[in-house]
Image 1: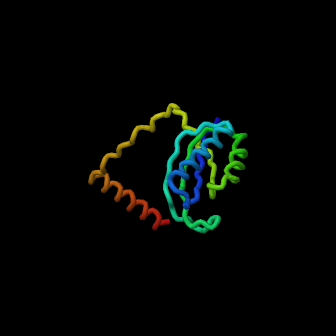
Image 2 (image 1 turned 120 degrees about the vertical axis):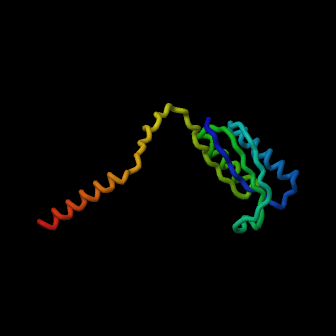
Length: 136
């Protein structure tokens, strides 16, 4: 079984009790498909970017669940024919990262500040380089 989440939009013209019934219906669809619902997050009513089935608003619901990958098309087909659900999107959640041993980064190299003596020596070397170039 893999972790999935489905974000679906329920018709906004339904009252709160009927929205809860729609959420229960989706949970039973998940269970009938052989999955187990995890958590449900109601986002509330929001304005849609464009009209969907003559609706300007919808109630967004995010549902997390576990399901075999072979059963996902069956769940999608069931959601398509559910009248309360305007749109839906099923997404597989990323696998949890397994903790691995990480080698520490190399020790930092600390550079010592330049002294005036080294600045003068660098100037002498650069002068000598310039003079050599001019001679050739």
